[in-house]
Length: 351
Image 1 (cartoon, rainbow, N blue to C red):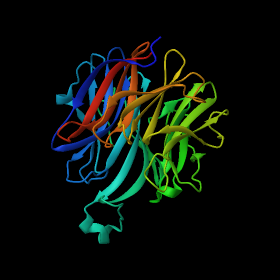
Image 2: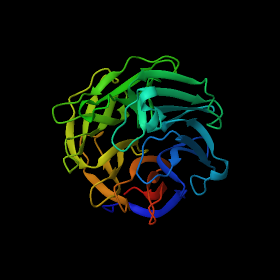
Image 3: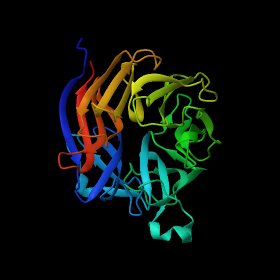
């Protein structure tokens, strides 16, 4: 068995020089149909993760990602949408966790009272929204939303547990990276009603916990990985991990994995029972990486493997679908040789 994945091919899915395009989520619907969401906003001289004209674009492929019908892409959210994590529940119902911002131009700060992070527009983190479509993601009616909680942001996609409940990971954000907590909301009725958030991993003296990704590795047993914020932007920024043995009601103390990144982790249950981690590494050598665990995320002996090199650190936020056993498509965002940010993909096979 080879020690690294067989890279089948690299693809560029969508680049628009007029837009900053990032944060994709891809899922499989029925048959060979894939659905992908991503954020778009006007390109500016600086990298902005907020913009008054941000939109969530939804596009699809009918041939397992060989081609994408970008000409007929639709819009799911506007006015500050950050990203939309997708989940297919079957029978045409597609649900999503929407990270929502209120964003205005900086000249309007006094009238709105909104603050801004360095280099960003004036914005407020409104909270986590739950949205759903009943026609395979073709339309996203504005009345089909639920507000889960203020001052939080989802990042990784929601999951459906073995018992049928829905779990929506997010992180509590008050404007300070040092005090962020990874949290999760739970619904036992298909998303109609949601619990108060459970703290999955709390901030500590070394920094905040954010951008959690959660999977259920066996009935009632959950694994979470977190992006850890530290006082400096260096190799101390490794993913932290913890677990729950009671369906997410309580969680073990998080511990560092030693896997260095700087951007969010994404977890995926493989058909062969192993657990896949993909992420964007924002330290040299920059790129999109993958690792595999044989024990539900306790250890990561296989990898990290480089799936695709990147010219700089402006990349990551991966999403993966398994097209057939062992054959994967991992999408992300990154810059092309002329520094346009867009959606990239790697078709590859597991070792």
